Amino acid sequence: MNILGYMQKIGRALMVPVAVLPAAAILMGVGYWIDPNGWGGDSALAAFLIKAGSALIDNMSTLFAVGVAYGMSKDKDGSAALAGLVGFLVMTTLLSPAVVSMIKGIPLDTVPAAFGKINNQFVGILCGVIAGELYNRFSSVELHKALAFFSGRRLVPIVTSVVMIGVSFVMMIIWPIVYGGLVQFGESIVNLGATGAGIYAFFNRLLIPIGLHHALNSVFWFNVAGINDIPNFLAGQATIDAALAAGKSLDQVKGVVGMYQAGFFPIMMFGLPGAALAIYHTAKKENKDKVASIMIAAAFASFFTGVTEPLEFSFMFVAPLLYVIHSVLTGISVFIAASMHWMAGFGFSAGMVDLVLSSRNPLATNWYMLIPQGVLFFGLYYAIFRAVIVRLNLKTPGREDDEAVPAAVQSTNRTELAKQYLEVLGGQANLVTIDACITRLRLTLKDRSIVDERKLKALGAAGVVKLGEQNLQVILGPLAEIMAGEIKALR
Image (cartoon, rainbow, N blue to C red; front, side, top):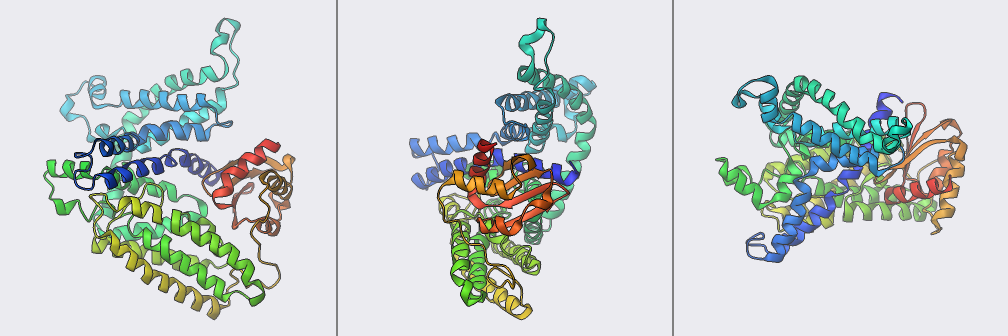
């Protein structure tokens, strides 16, 4: 597997722990709605919900270690998840400041600051990747009869604990360097303020076609370089209290925390639906009904849940200029929200559900202004997309010369639909691996050339991404994980 393909595998595995965030957001969001003044201090029920949500947020690094190990394992077995937890506990214990002080024989107050931040998502991901690979290598090993009880899957956590001792000693040398680099990168963006937030957002969209935006997100959304925007926002009053205790003013927290999230709401709730309307209006008359079925579903998903890939992939490759424009507009939107201190946050994505849940968060500053900003971006997207499509005669959905526009899938029988996908993909013999993230069916094929992209789109795929020589991603939206399970069941 090439480097890009392997990074895709890690990106897919990251979706397992990230899927926990909506639960935390809902629990904390409802808690803030119940007790909008005391934020848990005046209501036992609100405190119960807020603390239940923060239990997930505060332990995201552990969840990453467990979830990534599970996601990286070849057959999604619980032993891999256990190995991820074992590896994480070993590494974070050996690299804790007190232990580093003992091992190196240096005073505790001279231990590099990097070891005080060893419990973070980056280390969790690293431990998960290592544990997942060890599971794939050792889960089928058979030991001598005297040790037969420890054969196979039971062997993996043991091997992981031993391997992580060696990895920890290597990390003792390189972690301060890695941490310093991550902090420097994050600070270089943070120091740019709203401009840095806009730059981040631009690259966030630009990396989506190859699925590497998750790696970028981890730097700004989680505690990799000290930014930790999502957990800090969801923590609400706790973040404010911690900042005040550290000598910061309220203005340094409110209107700042959430700056790497807020500007996405106008894009996902309004901008992209505006693009969908432009694509529909510029489609050929005979294709409008078919295009409408695609665009309505995609725009609905983007507005309510913030899942944008079905819509983005409808024009990403057929009209890449539009996608660059989309990335630029996203950067501008995030820049505006950050500049004006219009703040809201999310636990899953920037859709209406998360906007409503975050509106009562004590860090949600002038969040309602994101709505008129969104209306403005709806108009911008519609006007720019329509003008560019018509002026350059771009072949967006409904404007193709030779092939019909893919229609939405009519059948509700998922097993039959899975059989159709399997046939178009070349049958069981052509599938090496099959998996899915939130919106993408991720495949490794023996012979990718036999796959008919037009037939995939006719079955309902919003787009297809080719990576390396054998990797293929089929954009199915929320149906992706269900379809992956159905196809696996047919093998």
